[in-house]
Length: 111
Length: 266
Image (tube, rainbow over the protein chains, first blue to last red):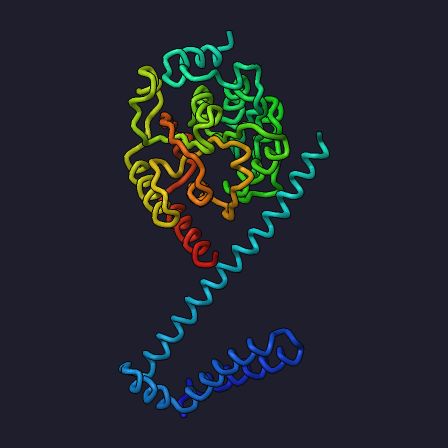
């Protein structure tokens, strides 16, 4: 077993442990938990058995297992950026409403 | 005679629109004419803008969008109603606050103008006339439209002022195409801050954006509500000061993505 594999297994194992804690503390919903659990357990398995990713890549017609992981990670990261952007925008709009309400109220009081 | 009045009468006397019914202003201000000026750190120019607009409007609302300078104080001293945001939110948010305040006042015409002196107050009657004559519910003052219909003395530029630089013209055309792509209405100046609406039309407009994307969104709302719509040519008057503010290329790219996200998540 390579050193990097040991590191990855420990880190991912810890993240999965935390995920269970979060579910127990009801900080995340069941659906959210399942998605993350699938993701991290997949990462866990691939860290333990790197050849898994290579065979999966070959089935999909991608050259190397590492490439497959990079493609998937990129898709995921872009998705997160997008969803953060959407959420940020919604938050901005809420803040805007509060500021407008206060400004107009103050203006009404003046008149 | 007030110099602004004098300019206005000079201007109207050689104006083709002048043949129609007289404006509400000369009828003793039957209509509310509310001018909304969104301003963010515009202490250098806001006073002059209000001074020029005062004689031509029944009310001026300056939306101070969290300015750190004396914008609000100066505007107040000049006699405008000042509505201040707690902190800076952006052009779109400021305009919407102005619209909300204007709608409370009652029926009439609402004009929006920039606070950096790039718009000529004397053109307000020209911008509002199509609404008074009920030929339009929304009017956009276009810096890029053919200026031949402007009076001869307004086709050039005043001494010491400059027209729209080429890069800005190019940028504006890109913005027009973007607006057309997203909202399906091709106009000659989608980013113009000089506009007029009837309050009735304003009540139907629904806007999301906080920033510069608001200009394109307004065009989209004109299309969605099928407003009767007119573009009136105006002069673009730039100073180094006004060029240092306003849109730039990266802000444009950011604006593009904001519209994209709004469209996807709508």
